[in-house]
Length: 480
Image 1 (cartoon, rainbow, N blue to C red):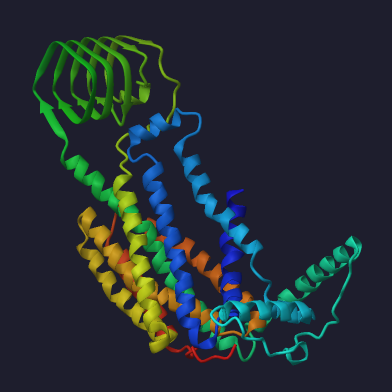
Image 2: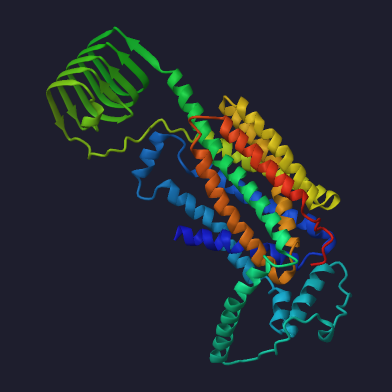
């Protein structure tokens, strides 16, 4: 169901939106207006990131508590993020049909009504203005006769015929992309799309995972180390032991009650006549330790938590159901949400900046300059050693890169005539998603081993995209 939703919303919707919107925008305003359209893509990303920040728990322990509820937060998050889709459906109900589509189907009267409606909207300040073009002066499409049928059977047959006709023509339209005069444009745009998606989506995976790595390393460095100590007749009650390493420590007649053990290590320790009651643990282990006369009551202390230990007279009561997945309470989503939210926010001013230069400089120049600067900025990945540094770099990178992405969207829309525009955009967008998946897999392999490979990969692929974009013809003056 989720995959079907993505197919309908992303794969099926975006190509149609660009082609449809172009029909209602003049050539002179097309670059600026399409850039404004792309602003709402960035706003949607901000909305999603903000809802995640508000709704989803930000630490591992709150995730556990949330999952104990009947309706956990991730379900609420999905419901809230689905609301704009329902609003879009309502909005589409009030939108006019594509006049170009109506003309292609021989429905000139309906196309005339749409044109009149657009004219009325554009001249709201001048109520006396009249639309001058008549039906006879309209451009014609396939010249198919206008079908009028009031019977449900006739309507069903017409609908079925349209579906059949569409399927028959789809392959022909697709093949046109690889024939003159569109072959060169298709191939060049394909390389730019693949390079951009591989680099951008790869980094989109690398950023949060690298923040998690930096956070984990910082957490381990700040561990509290207690060694060569003895605890006797001691009560540890209703608390949380976090990031503590016990080395060569003796525990005698010690009771751990209603306690959370998070990243606690007992290494080479001796525990005698101790009680663990109502304990929940995460990444907690007893290693090379001696345990004698220990009572575990209502805990999750399964056998895998006692590697290479000597255990004698151990009792377990009310052991939680076994699970090999040791959930990490030390998950901190706050930094991840901050990174994503700030990264999405910077796309809004980046998109607005692109709208100012799109018509002045042209799509190709904006695209090539943006990708070249993004390629150069990728070398700063080498210096990222902190969470703040990663967040700042991603914000700057997104601000620079989004202009090129928007230029690519607009150039793709304008590079092809109306009858194959959606086919072209859909194909290139689909190919870019495949490149994005491959980029995510490639970057994901080097999160814990190398910064050089993500840095060089991003720089190289975006530079390739910039070079191929220079071979494209400027599209801002295309009369399509």
